[in-house]
Structures are given as C-alpha cells and as structure tokens.
Length: 142
Image (cartoon, rainbow, N blue to C red; front, side, top):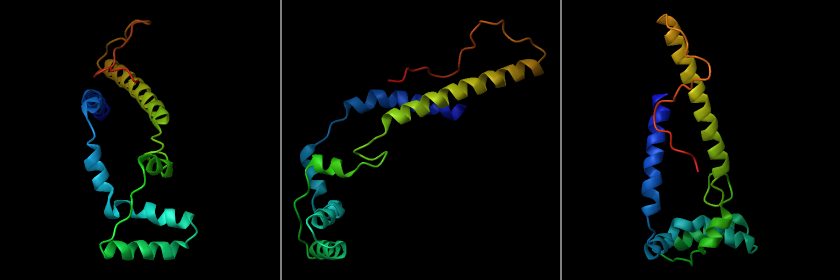
C-alpha cells in the first residue's frame, strides 16, 4: 500500500515538472548523427531492396570508417516505432486503465485491512453509507 501511495506522490510531482521541460532541437538532432540510428539506416536500405545482411554490413563498415548518413526525420523515427510503450505508441489509455484498476484494488484492500483491524480491536464497523477515506494523495487522473 505504501508503495502505491509513494508512486502516486511521485506521479503528482511529475505532472508539475514535465510540462516545464523543453527540448533543445539542435542538440537532439546532433545526438542522432552517427550510429544512434544505425538500425533505421539498415532498415531504410532493406526497404530499398538490399538484403538485410548486406545492408547491415555496409552500415557497420561505414560507421567504422567514420562515415555517417543522414538521420531520418522525426516523423520517420516515430512511424517506425509502433510497439506498445514505444515512441509511436505510448499506450497511455491502457496505462490509465491499469492505474485506475490498481487504485480501486488498493482502496478495497485498505478497507478490508481496516475492517480486520477494527474487528481484532473489538470495535464495530463504521455505519453503512459512511465513506472510509483512502490514505495518501488523491490526485485525479487525466
């Protein structure tokens, strides 16, 4: 339970910090030069008709010799990455759903635990209709 509460607190802090981040496009583009996107270059050559092994060896040889190649555009980079959790498919709707289910499970378990403690202490359960408030931050999901 404590782990979920702490995770919720960290996520809440991230909602404040992440919108303030900015990307230095020039530095990001420079970081993509060279071998960072070698796989994309291999796949581009394969799509152009080269056998994979030949394209792989060519790109590896060019990089070893200090040659470079034009990095793909941002749109091309994102279009290649469609696996769930990847750049082109973050899977946020599923993640939100899983978070909601986890929070609901945590609230149910907390109620069960609190009920068991009250029972052990010989105290009666709260009257029906009275809400038992969950512990920890209660930030709404967006």
